[in-house]
Image (cartoon, rainbow, N blue to C red; front, side, top):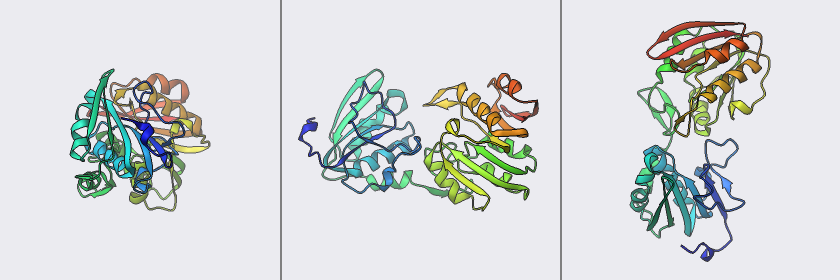
Length: 308
């Protein structure tokens, strides 16, 4: 497709971090991924405001269709969408999904990715259904506002549920690292001795759902990467840290969260942590904390209390 035919009058966008060798990324593009703090919000773009969008399509079907529909809606007439994903993480379905929206698709394969290029069609089809399915909603089953794509978006994570059962009444100033949609915060805030709670998540959608789920004057919600924050003097940290990056297991993520907790706590402060049983966090905890106690081990999870 001839990109030069597009008028250079509107901005270009990028969603996620697609490999540069697979998709040309226009210089000066605005980032729109909800997983990159500080990015723009694709939902807020006016229709027809982009000449080009490069989208690393999410692996989840509902989330992927939602992001794709938003991208197509934001494109100007004849604007170009380049959408790509690994074949085993939604890439094999991309062309079919784009065609269902009314797009004529050029599809290629490279390095286990499917790469689809199309223009904004004259008549978008089925877009409202995709936008509705991927939008925030109140889930009666779990009792929280949530959105597809957020961690454990349609079920209560069993690790977090186990941690809730073992959390004592905390006090002072604390933080929930990787707060998700705010499930653990309700338990933490039951203690009247908690004076301030910072809820942090790298996913913008999670922080937006947390803002709906948690109404308390003691709460501060931050869209940020925990690993890049500077916090100090905390009395407690609570966390169910991530251990996947882009779908692949990455134990260094949880280890980084533990190190950041140790940096953020005052002497005598306490970390409460839930982890999958197979994750070797003891080797990181013991050098950083004066006392490490295993409080529970059940259903494939471990609950640790670590005192600074």
